Image (tube, rainbow, N blue to C red; front, side, top):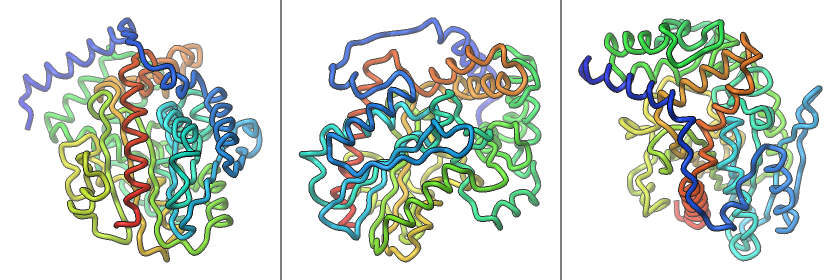
Length: 398
């Protein structure tokens, strides 16, 4: 366990980093074709996706959110492959504001589609699983729900609601995570609360308590909801109506935030296969991928008590397929405390201090999208495209 003095020093250092980060804006140059894949906002990203999908002769489907948010759409591009029984689905924007990276990868892949996607599985690009969060610079959707904690059955929702809300410590940390006022990194309730919890239960317990989420606090960060949300209902209906007789399917969901900056942590899960080191090496020979069994001490550790992940939910729609793979690709941006501070600030602003919302939303975007850093953008595009093609070409070998 981390010593008291070291932990105190670490928390103080990241707090200072959070205060100073907004003034640091390196702008290394990048290739124009790389820059052209990255958008400034959801609407620009959607227009680029649609244009490149049309140029690639993809089947393009538009799924509007219901009600007052009908202008916001999930867009789906389908490129039929030589093997109709194999399906590769690429998801962007499950966490809304994180969508800039995944959208850029999709733009690059669609731009190259005429030469690189003419064989193999049918490819499905889902742009902006959470269009509300992407457009409004929120990680959650129009109901404050984290869509990556929300794909559950009615029975699973009921079980979550009936469970102890503080089973892994979320309730204990909630006053610090979800203040009822404008939040700031120097709030006396925040870092001391995290430090106290870490000293009592271990540093990893803080992350575990937070990322496991809540099904009891509708205005809290990482709220999983009480029912399946509109985005998931729309995509569930789409998959069920458009794809049958699938024997091999892989879901690749792109996220940003955790891990070393510009480096992607890759996690592979499967409800139908045992994910072995040999399988991971076959899929991604040049990358250290992980499975649930070896996730400790990585950017994706601490998620053992979390559920409702989008890839798991969509894979459940293909229960008869003998090969089902869920792949999460997470690109690091800033340190974990910086990211958490931004989440806390934006959530508090939305619910309790709307006059601070614009500043908080921009800070949240900066936590998940390092838009000023050409090296980060280049790394995201290179690794995103590389991983996609590795999965596409190796899916038949699993």
